[in-house]
Length: 144
Length: 295
Image (cartoon, rainbow over all chains, first blue to last red; front, top):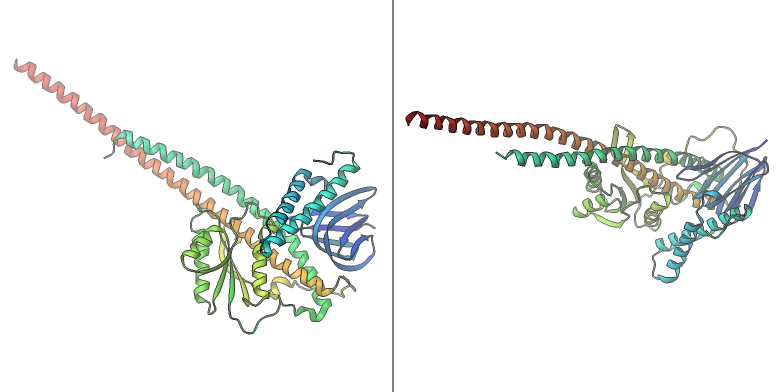
């Protein structure tokens, strides 16, 4: 019996459907979830999430959040989530450079700005990683 | 009495204005729909987040005494998050919400610190001497959750470090496409009814918490605060565009009325011109005839 998975962000429902397995970046380490998993509530760190349906693996970039595993139902509340093929590498790269630039060149930042930039940096890094992996698997150009 | 040519010029300019207001009306109508969809799209997340909270709170027992949930006995200062529009051309939308905020400030027995999201609200309130501690405008036309997190952080920080003991949210609620109303809602401490759903019946599964129930609660409650502000921003946007659509429709109707009455006076002026010309010709002819008779 497959797992019912939902990936929702504040802006939209990113995924909803039946999967055979889901691997999430838990704060305590990467967790692979199969049907009949023990109930778990965990926080997530920014990272890669993938789902397996049959032999098909789909990758997502997650910007932190929560996972609620209960029987055969898995709900992921993500701060941000994108499917690998939705990610625009050029834009993510630009965002990463901009964030790094900001962190390096403008030291007197208040807390909010710093928090915002650091979060943006982490998100863009994960996004790039997921998008590059996806493209490499399909033999596509990974530079842009 | 303006000449026929002057009136014609005015008709042309009113026609141009009508074209613009008509275009703005249909743009606003499209945006109402989009904003409504965005409000709808946040519902699954907030519903799931509340379920999650119910699971954590019911299992963690004593953990419900989280600082963000704790009601404070002594209130010395409160914060008000005012959500308004960034632009005008929307009838009384901005002044209505600003009036609601000012009434709240006047009737409050404690000093009120204001955080504004929306340019118009900031302008209207700073003119009236409100104590604005932070401003986050303008917002992009399709705001994401990340666009409002800085504003939420400011009030969360102010609340947790004791600068304010309550946080209220003032925005225009989108009740239905025909009904929008300025409201003031308490944001912090989180209201039990806004966070705790009806607890699902039956025994709860023996959850394992990672890293721990307290940590999850710590991460989850700020998110719930954010989502409430985010939903308020989106509702306010839907209301703003509704107000704009109505304002623009009225403007278009007024322009049409104006064109009708201007056309009327144009015709009158034209008729008058013809009449006086005819009179000239007639009297000239009469004079000629008389001269011919005399000679």
